[in-house]
Each structure stands twice: as structure tokens, then as C-alpha cells.
Length: 142
Image 1 (cartoon, rainbow, N blue to C red):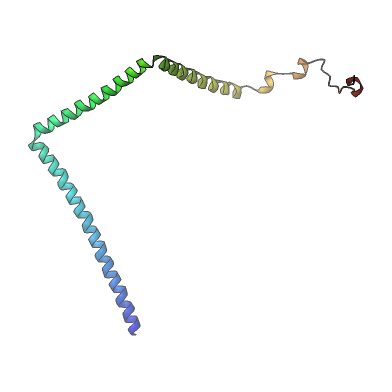
Image 2: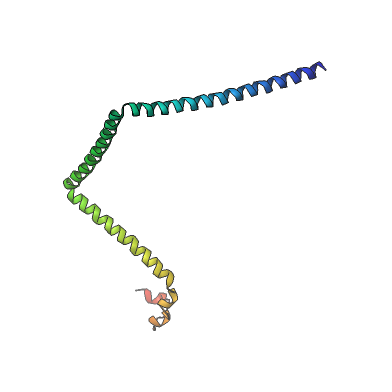
């Protein structure tokens, strides 16, 4: 009887701690959401209060991104000019490869559509006087 009571007490203790743990985790999630909301609302309020500063910051970010993009494009153009021959060869190869892939695609399609036996209707008629013979070993000796 005492053993059963002790087991029952242990089971109830585990159940109570489990529920406390679950409640604590739920509270932690709620608190994280609250802090996140406060951060977002605070940022929005600060932007409203400092509207002109915020607009200037947005404009500067746009200007900077545009400048970085332009600088990247100009550097690429300068590299292409400096390596003009290399660039021409690369572009020529890209065009050749695109044509090659297209040609292979078309050839595969044409081969699939045709019947290979219709290409050479009577192969035996192409070689009318063909005879297969084994040479005489005596004729090979000198």
C-alpha cells in the first residue's frame, strides 16, 4: 500500500511539474511576442516623430544602392574594354554553343521522326559484287 502511494505521489509530482513547465514556456512565447511588438511600434513611432530624418535616411539608402549598382556596371564595362578580344571570343563561343545545342536538339527530333530503315532501303544493292573469301595460306608465302 505504501509503495502504491509513493508511486502515485511521484506521478502527480511529474504531472504538476509538466504543467508548470508548459505554462512557463507559454509565458516565454507571449513575452517574446510582446517585446517584438514593442520594438516594431517604437520604430514606427520614432519614424513618425522624426519624419524628415527618416525620409533623408531612405533617400540616402536609395542613392547609395544606385551608386553601388552603377559602379559595378562601369567596372564590368571597363573590364570588357580592356579584355576586348577575350570578351569577343567568349561571346562568339556562347553563340556557337547555343547554335550547337539547338542543332543537336533539331537533329534528335528529326532522327526520332524518321525510320532508320527507310534511309537505306536496300543496303545489299549498294555493294553488288561483294564476296567474302579467306585467302589461301599457300598464296601468302613467298
